[in-house]
Each structure stands twice: as C-alpha cells, then as structure tokens.
Figure (cartoon, rainbow over the protein chains, first blue to last red):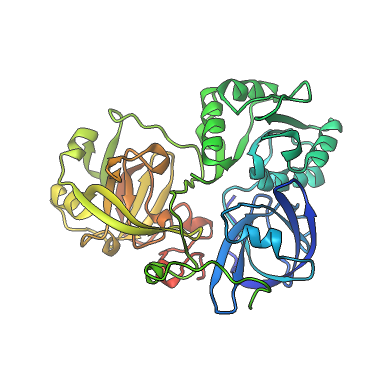
Length: 247
Length: 201
C-alpha cells in the first residue's frame, strides 16, 4: 500500500465546473495542467496566493475516481470561519486557475488488489475520500462487497445522496446505510441517531463476512465513536484506517 | 502565481515571525491520526529504551514519573499547515532519560515507536540538548489519549508528526531509517522553517 515516492510539484489547474452538492458543500472540478495518476483516498494541496505574496495552503481529498486523472473533483465544505473554503465558495469561478500539488497521502488508500469486503464510515464531508473508493470500486471491482455507513445531520445534507441511492438500488454488492442525526430516518435500513457501538455491531453483522479493511473519515469525535464501536464489536484495530479533522 | 480575487487573512503582526512558511495559526488543537486511538491503562504502560533490538532499560508508569520533570512552552507546527503558539508541556527530557540509563547516545539516529504500530525517525542531535522530551502533561493536565496520552514524544522544532503519540520505545539505530509517514511520502527530517513537508522538499 506504499505509494511510489513521486515528486509532487506545484502546478496550475483550471476550474472546469462548480457543482452545488448540498447547502454547505460544492464540488470543484479541476483540470491539472500536468495530469497525474492517483489512488482512491488520496488528497491534493491547494495554494492561494495574494498580490502581496501571502499564501494559504489546505489539503482536500479527491472525490473522483482515479479512472479520469484529467479532471479531478474536490468537494469542499464551506467553513464559516475559514480562510480558504469561503474563498472557494464565494469567489472562485469556472475558468479560474488554482495552484495544486498532488497526489498526496500514502495510507488512507484503496485499490482493487487490496480486496474486500470493505466497511466505509463517513461523517458529513468525511465522505469525500470514501466516495473516490466507492466510484473506483464501481468502475473496476464490482465483485468487492462494500458497505457505507454515512452520517449526516439531515436528508438534504447527505453529500452525493442521489448517486449513492442509485448505486444502492443496483444491489450489486454496494450497500448504503444512512444515519441522520437531526431528523428521523427515511428508509427502513437507516438510522436516526449519532453513530454508536450498537450501530457499529449491527452494521458489521450486515456485511457478508468480516471486513478486510475499514476506512473511517470525519470529525475526530465521529471517527472515535465509529472506530471504538468497531473495535468493541471485534474488529482488529490493525485493519482500521482513519482520517480526521477538527478537534 | 497570484490567485484571482484572493487577498488572504492578515496574520497577527506580533506573532508573524513565529510562523514558518505556509503555516497559519489555530487556537484549537486539531487531532490527526492514521488509525484507532489506543487506550492504554496506566498500569499496563511501559516505556523502553533500546539499542538496536536490545532493550537497555524499561520503566513502568510510576517509575517513569519519578524521573526529573521539566516544563517547557513551545510553538508547534503540523505539516497540514496549522501552527499553535505557546503550548505548555511537562515531561521528562530525553537528556534526563539517558542520564538515568547511564549512557551516552550510542548511535546518531533514533526510531520512536508507539502503541498501535506507529514509528518515526529523529536524529539524536534533535532529541538531546534540551530540545525534546517525553511529555506526560499538556496545559497542566494529564495528556489525553487523542493527543497521545499517556505519553508522547515532543520534538517541537520539527513538524509535529515527529512528536509520536502513544510512545512506548526509543530505539537507537545505526542508520537514519524512515518511519511510518517517512515511508509514505513525507520528508525524512521535517524542518518547518525549510518547509520540508514531502520526500523531495
């Protein structure tokens, strides 16, 4: 799972499309001037430079599948007190150039050869790197069973909701379980509370066999709740990878 | 390349000189880790000093806390671009651990090992001379598991992935061998002031 140690230089990328996903999340489709191969789960750095030379850099996970390296999709949540995400939401337009550096990240990755079953647990915009895994599996590895437990505040806050519901309805080995924390569930298989130990035990029992890999991404308290629950239900800590944000 | 429409947030002038290139100040304390948070009971905790494969000396929690305690206040810098100023820590300087073990550093490099399997490499010169400690308290309180408790390495002048959480061993090694993130694309040394984030920086 160790990535090749590539030189990751800064390059310009053109904003090709901006898509509103939820009230707080927009997708930015970027065309790098020098496209690069990447793995599902990896991220890029973006760098903004002011006229006085001041720079701000942040990391964003890639949501799109590695099958198309010429157009990469970042899904960026608007953080009200942030410096970079409000700029993307309020200022960036199609046709703008943004500097980026990638691919980065050598651990929170999945490729076909890593196999499954996979358990993915995402909270809010923590879905983004998991989405790349889901899309990659759909493109090249439909025999790999994969379950996504996705937590969101409300039905309308579920990032990529329509795409995920359509994938779920194919019944081809991808299973979606939603848990909504601020309104009741809308589907029989879903939950209406925060992720907890009991939920993780039930989710693990719904997989056809024990997961080979578990990926959890979201805020730190969310990831702790999901991971501690999975471990309490017998999942070895060694197969769990996490990506966290916040405190 | 100037980014159209970006002016940026002014960093406070009085502390700007304390910010390495590409960093910004946070007031909270973000938590980043690659796997589950290990929960280590204090009566199960051990810390071992090794030379190569050979254990040299080992301490349980009570014994370790009986070593001389030092307080330091430092700025810390995470490779993900946040920096946090004036963080205060308490623990045992590496100098005092070596003195207790009665040794001079036998090699020039160390691998730090953690509960959960994490490791990171640091030159001995960056651990001694008062530069680094095994921290057991943060801001006057026992170090929380999310921040590396019971004990973490603290090497504040390098990017913070070098300050291994959940530390359980320091191992002297002959060559500078990459640890967990150093094998996965991050810089072998990690000096924030030279912006050594990735392998070829």
